[in-house]
Length: 206
Image (tube, rainbow, N blue to C red; front, side, top):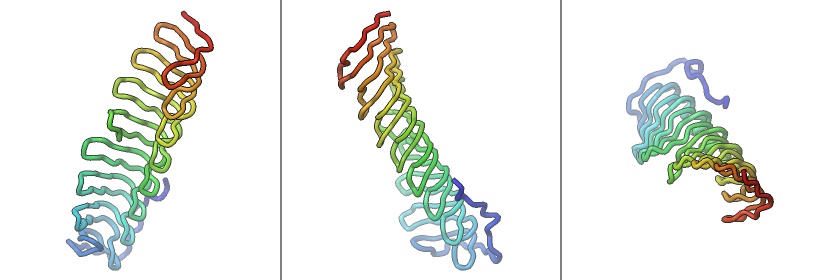
């Protein structure tokens, strides 16, 4: 992302320092040029949200930290008052997303623990959702590497189970469809799979 700026190179002449100056829906303390924030400063909104960081011509732009009154925190790149570039969002329960942002949305490469069951995902995001190539690690030690679409396992991929079993093949909405299961004892089952049972094409005991 190329939109982050070096504030030191963009400061105008006539910069002044203000304290608790009324600005939009709150108060601002920091560098002030031509009637608006420009440089570095802290903006406290009336709802107790706080942005502290770099500004360009009245907009949050550059490196900054935004803290919501509900405990969420974003720290990273901002462009035109939006998370955009590289940054990390942390939730009060400890969950986080760290990686690329595009116009306030998770988009690009990143990793997140934003799940209710302890999963960790590392890989591609598209418009705020898991999508593309990635790796999902489950709380029980299982992990999947492969394709995701719209937040779900879909396409080609490999699931390695904590007991040593491995499935390689196609997936639809998180369920195995056509592929090969290699069991820890060496048994191989290959073929089309329903949600619960494979339609066995070949069985190769080891």
